[in-house]
Amino acid sequence: MKILIAAGGTGGHIWPALSFNQWLLRKHGHVKSLFLSGSRDMERELYHHAGVEPVVLPVKGSPLSGPLASRVSRTMDLARSIGEVKRAVREFSPHICLLFGGYVSVPAMFVSKMKGVPILLHEPNARAGRVTCIAAKARIPVCTGWDVCEPLPSGGFTPVGVPVRNLRRLPPEEAWKLLGYDLDLPPSPRVLVLGGSLGSDPMTVLFSKVSAERLFRSRNFLLVGSSERAVRTSRNLWLLPREWEIDLLYSIADGVVSRAGASTLGELVVFGLPSVIIPWRGAADDHQAHNARVFSEKGFGSIWEIDNGIHENLAFMIDYELKRARLGQAFQFPGRGTGEACEKIWELLQQIAEGRGRN
Image (tube, rainbow, N blue to C red):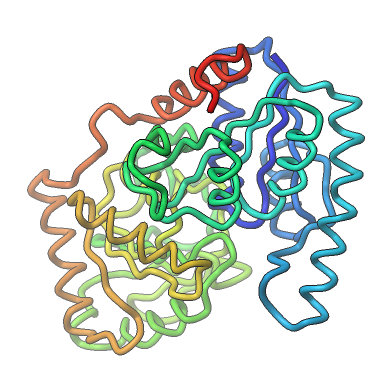
């Protein structure tokens, strides 16, 4: 089987796609895949790290937001991308197209429909994005990361989970050594602060401030992606560079404070890390708030809002989640290990490619 995979925009779309492809290589080495990506620097860097060479489309964001000039430019980029996808489909001759959302999926969906290539779309978020809603209206099968995917009706999608990387669990000292920072391993409790694949200055500003407050002084905070090199700036605050081998950081963590990207939440569940989630309210369709709500309702972590948030409540939530972990009460998805979602997606791909299970 040959699979055309479209994944771009943010790590939330790209990591599940790469994770699925890595699983395919391990389990079904005869399957060939070709990736379509957008052209942002972060996308190029992420694919380069994964050792994957995608077909890079001139897609840099939503044509529905931003200044008028940006919207016009992005619309033209999408139109130009159609020609690139046509060429890729003609040369690669895929049996099926697998979309992981984001606007890079639009030209892939359009061309695949036009050429009669079967399509499956994976939506990682608890609220469907615009592209997913378009796909659902076009009767393209949709599988999802959660058992909720608003505003799609129940029965209008197949929950499969979020594909996550094959995460190693190492002793903290070994993981810290492999990270190669020229610093001593901070003492426990160690709390990772994750701002998402695009970074988050508000998270850096927030924890640079609260780490000095009395309520937070007993915890050591490691702000990932906040510096080009690892540096300790105060008694309990470390600024760390962006790290693609995220399992090394998970291995040293006692707890995590994170944005609510679906890929990160899926990894936190699989790894079983106690978590406080601060959803980014600027996310498209406020999907991070929906992710955080489902994550919290299932008992995987607590939610704290950065806008008008009370620091005492944040300190309480971090302590509460750390205590849950010490008592062995951190939760994991039952039956959803690193390969479970991939297996389910693979089964759907085979059904759809063979003409079974299509809408």
